[in-house]
Image (cartoon, rainbow, N blue to C red; front, side):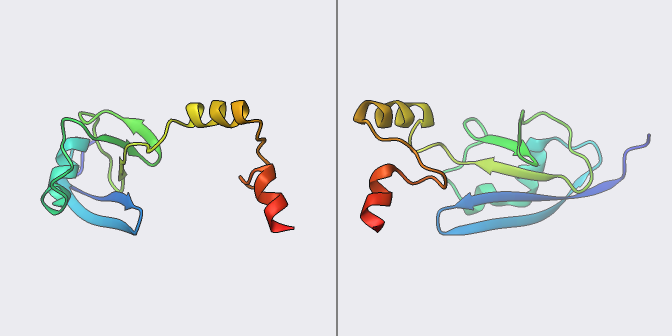
Length: 112
């Protein structure tokens, strides 16, 4: 199968206060790294660094040298604020149980 001359992609960077979606065009066979650079997001958010960021394509973690396909959506992931496993273990140690919907037993009691 022949590679297209140019491909249209999107780069997404979710922030707590906004969802940023930047369309970009890259040459056929471009990598995730090249797609991120083509989007201009690195100039807009100087705290992002290609050496440290984690990215995925449609929700699946990928390497920056992975080849893109036409209409791929690159997602740039922010670091976790807290380790989910550690939070779960702390809740367990505190004697709290999670209810359906993400609230704790304590949250349900306060709502009554």
